[in-house]
Image 1 (cartoon, rainbow, N blue to C red):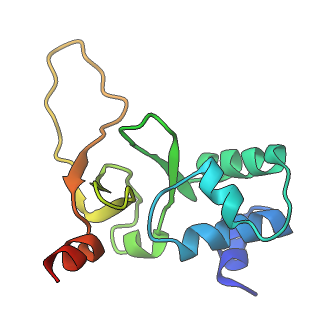
Image 2 (image 1 turned 60 degrees about the vertical axis):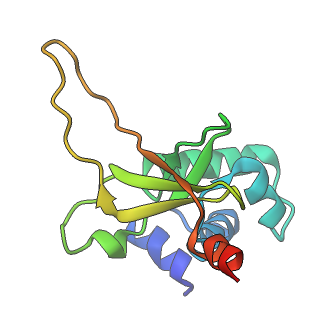
Length: 144
């Protein structure tokens, strides 16, 4: 059984070729992906509705999360549950890094967004923190 199939099984989700293939893409890629980028990486010809439903299911079941992007295009990233097993809970309140050269957005799971004390009457739904700069690969290439 592939790693993606095991993840689906552990989440008690139906194991379908589309779900396995899309989840394999998320597990393999280090950066957050747009719907269009995922479509390009699909080997099999899945229709847009199947991909949309797969992404929706993954979001609802905590397999992926939405990632902020200054372009306004929705990006998604894999929720590495193995990374969070030590804490017992997965949090999406981590920092995201946008590389200004290669345009990839990466989750920095080890850097958490600090709690923000809001004025009375304000209710927080989510926190988004995006750091911009050069990723490890692009900064190395620039130094050479």
